[in-house]
Length: 114
Image (cartoon, rainbow, N blue to C red; front, side, top):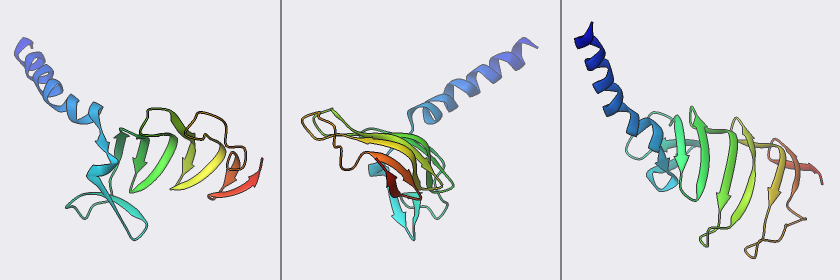
């Protein structure tokens, strides 16, 4: 039993960094409306880190996302559903002020209200 536990723990240690760290958007490419890890033909599923942060499921953005400017300030935050902006999105200018024109509620990546 102890040997089995040690083997399982060792496997978890080696597998964990790839699950936790995620990919940066620089490691990914978009083709035909889907997102892939470079040099593969399988739509990407996993976490994205760096200046764009969120999850991708079967090649499409899904769930909560945050974008950051190169200066580290928040650029935008909101949710995706099947690769489309969905629900409330808040957009900011580089100086940190709210971009009132872009911010609002979205459905299917189209702004439907402020």
